[in-house]
Length: 104
Length: 202
Image (tube, rainbow over all chains, first blue to last red):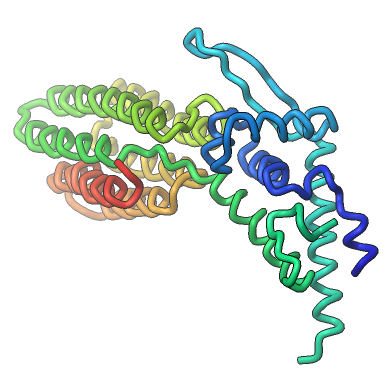
């Protein structure tokens, strides 16, 4: 169990970053505003965490204009998808191990 | 480290409980991300009212062309009302229609609407207007079910109701068609529109 915990990806283990990656896994492309509403977080907090994920190559940032207003959208990369999958698998393994050692 | 930085940061909570809650958090975010909540209930209600009026006016038309014209005018009004109210609700909810679930909703709804329009033209040219109510009810039902896959759960149910009416229209006399169209585009839109407006904020 301890080894599993130590191997958890610190990049997506933080709540907001895990939320961003999870949301993008389901919503394909989401705007900054969509993510902010979904995760109920501030502009600065979301921006900081999204930047970390972008630097790690987990998400891709797409900037454009919509009705002359700047639009920032995010998309999950294959690396980000793989990281989320690995994270979920680790969590499930932790659950299985706990169930194995807990008597009924 | 699991404790202290993750979605659940209570030191006293056993690791398996934390793992379980992390998984629930991921599931919850994914579910909310996939749910498009900008479907305009009030817009649907207005479309229902205009469709009820259209059904009444269409039923008293002397010619099939007059009947078709009434329904086509109603379709244009309905699409306009839908676009305006969808954009307004999406803006109010802070949801983008050009990305994510909003985009998915429109992209999955649009093909059956376009197919319905093209088949209407084809059947009008072939002089087979009798099958149009069945076609409209079934295609709108299909579009609403597929569009509803990325929306609130009520939308696919609305689509199923339309498909049921489409199936019923296969087995009833032609004189009942305006009643079925009134029940579908009028009654269902009014009923579901009110429910969505009350349950999902407008």
